[in-house]
Length: 94
Image: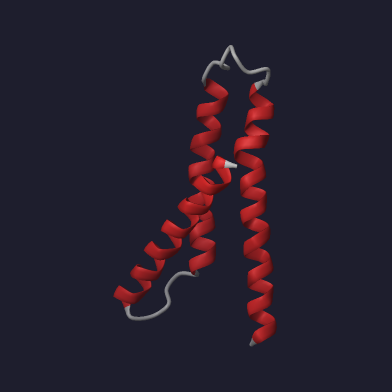
């Protein structure tokens, strides 16, 4: 659950940074959701690399691929699904 909160926080930081960049530019240069997803995916790649190259803790009965799925892939899947859902909702509203 902590990984989901972490990636959601990264998403909103990226979203707000891109929003600020668009405000400074005076027009919409970048799509905020897509740019935030790209930032989240870059952080997920670094996190996944760290999981795969680090030794597994001796107290936990989990291997690296299970940790990668639980701590990286699952939160990213939830965030991407939410972005697609809200993107489709915005298109229906317009």
